[in-house]
Length: 85
Image (cartoon, rainbow, N blue to C red):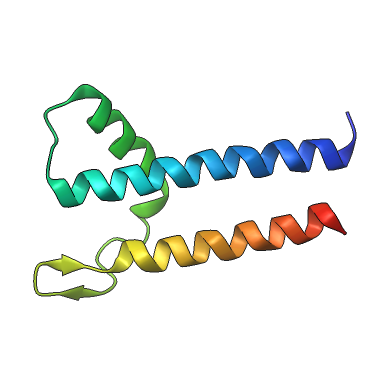
């Protein structure tokens, strides 16, 4: 397997994880925690989002997931540049 193919697979896995994080954020806004699938997605997403939790809180609104997604997208863009060079 070439390095380029391995990086493309890694990039696709990161994209899938980014989608799971977005679902986890949406589920947290909706406040639905009684479904097993919702709990599983939130648990997977909290692995990364938990490191940013509580950084910027305004009232009851936690804006830290926005920071986390910004950093995540920056990392993905760097990975994309490495792949396509």
